[in-house]
Image 1 (spheres, protein in one colour):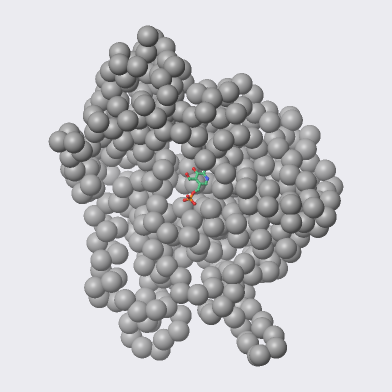
Image 2 (cartoon, rainbow, N blue to C red; image 1 turned 30 degrees about the vertical axis):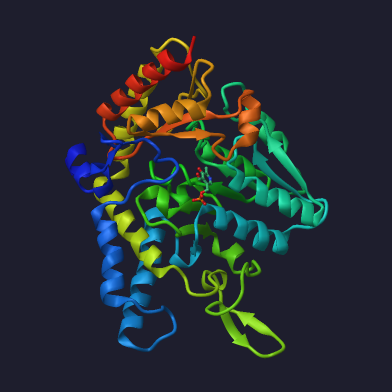
Length: 407
Ligand code: PLP
């Protein structure tokens, strides 16, 4: 497909909205992406023509939605190159996927004195559930350190592996700095110590080819809403030999094999982890989003976003007093920065008045903020529909912030 950014823009209705009378410049894609017509239409289509609960009915509509839902699972499996769609558990998003892991993996494999490793750059979603597990089970949470640029110190990470290590749970891409971790190498080293690995792919899945077999990870979590899909749907990928052993997370309907008043047996994975009515409309919408992405091609998406990121970094660096937070050769389409001594909220508010949506604050990564000795940053993050004009608007906005707020 020819890469025509204006054509892509025309597929996202929200991008024609005006904010305070100005054209919306949406640079908050790391938080959530906008949705193309094809995804919105698919959701409408399900509600208008097929809506019916899945897995339970024998009637026509229920069979259609069940097929669409299970085909969506196959579509996800294909997209991440899982061996089987039975390795794909639908969840509400990355956060729920990691909570599922902290409960089900924790209850099945972890005991007092065991250890879990995370890194100092994690989103709270990949930190707090492990803190709670460690408290509950009297385990130890080990933290892989990062350097002054925000990059993992790999030899220090590798020193943390020992015979008590039960899992390494680590992000693929930092949501604050955009730094891409050398995930294949890390998984390789973990496996050399017989430690399984969970990858938080919330910030990588929308932007790069993520192949679970090539990476050789044991688990992976990601969210639909960050990859042009609906809100409230996400995925936990897991190897079957783990998923089939792990105790259920939530319980109730749809995940049982046989129930008596005394005892219950459970379905195999993935259904044993999907208690209650699943968000089948979300799953079908996610499959439509994957179709959308694959139709463009992740290489093209990555090239486009790389160009925008480099352009933004160059523009921001040319402004005296602007400080980029986090530096690495290998980065995704996220740029965090500070403008002189201006508070990130003030910067964000002024940009907002210009119609520019950026994220400000600690980005759910308070330990990383502490590491950098700051309370927050301004974060611009790019997607398929962003243009160099969007970046120009950001740079002009930052110059204005500087004039207004900095001495
Ligand atoms: N992990 C990372 C790296 C993220 O960036 C985010 C969201 O920003 C999450 C986890 C949590 O994702 P969700 O809120 O979709 O569950």
